[in-house]
Length: 86
Image 1 (tube, rainbow, N blue to C red):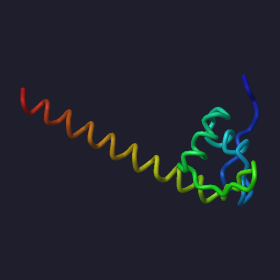
Image 2 (image 1 turned 135 degrees about the vertical axis):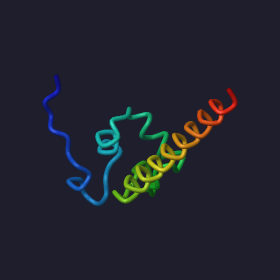
Image 3 (image 1 turned 90 degrees about the vertical axis):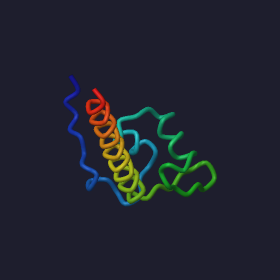
């Protein structure tokens, strides 16, 4: 078992690295770079280096939370309508 203590987002610096995003989101390195290259997580590219404001991660998490809530509400609505038809 991994006994490494997870850091809270507030413990990370204001500008974070792709490696830190990997830790925060617990995703693969390729997943991190996919999110950065797609612009899903806002960043600035300087040469081969990414400058990622911590606020970009906060915005991404907020967006995914809203998306999840909307998806769940839609599923509940569709499920409710299916039951009403029976």
